[in-house]
Amino acid sequence: MASSPNTKSTSTTETVRGEHRFDIAGYSRKQGVGAGNVLTSATFAVGGFDWAIRYYPDGKGDEAFVSAFIRLVTPNATARARFDLRLVDRATGLPRSVRRSVEPVAFDAGRARKCEWGARAFMARAELAASPYLRDDRLTVECVLDVVQGTRLSRTTASPETVEPPPPPDLRGHLGALLRTQVGADVAFTVQAEAFRAHRVVVAARSPVLKAELSGSPPTVAVDGMTPLVFKTLLHFIYTDALPGLGDLGREEYRELVRNLLAAADRYAMHRLKQICRVILQEELDAKTVAAALDSAGHSRHCQALGDGCVQFMPSSGLEG
Image (tube, rainbow, N blue to C red; front, side, top):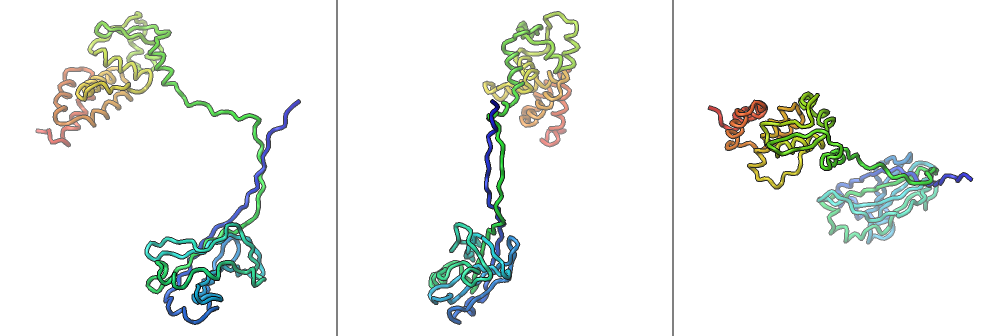
């Protein structure tokens, strides 16, 4: 019997957010009139409705407190919204929530008790006078509204089983393992009597010069003008496209290896390796090492790139003339 697919439905309340700041300048002239005296902000639109902040500097009923409300002013409209009435710190510009609704509340512009929401006891007048919100005879009331637009129901069909994503590619690791294990190796390079076994197809694919040298060659190929360490590093790059860890070398040994590796890359037309070596040497070259590098370049018929790099370095380091 075929099984039914797993399904899931989600009910989402969609809202539209809006903010408005009501700046009250000359605050001292607005208070002292008596309870019920109201200051009203300009009308602002959020979620397809018009709203206004209403602030009572002498309170709406109790003169010991200021009062603040958010009112729906669209005629005969009804809406549901969350509100957050705040006061703004005059020094930092950051708002502090004073009265807010956790859940959406119902506004009804046609009903006196439902047309606005807020707090009669918004803040004690004495507390406000000593606060950072009332400074330079100015107060800013902020309101953040999240107006409910409706409820959306979505249905999702899930696969019966969760399929894990594929692992990241590891061609570099596999070819590196092939070099280490030497499984299927069909050619050996001898460097100063030390043998390095490799795979013709891999080496030929990475260097056109080695491809030509391996064409019709015997199983053993002699490599001159190179140390075993340099060739071993070169072979590692051929298989993995990266340099091996060389942390056990001293700084001068490392420089010498990279200089010789640059010559090898130039010799075998491995342009990416050559550029990597040039970048490393550019970072490592200084006044004391340029002379040694130029001497190395002068003694190698494969090291024109190293000499060029040193010549480029000389003007910027003050070594000319």
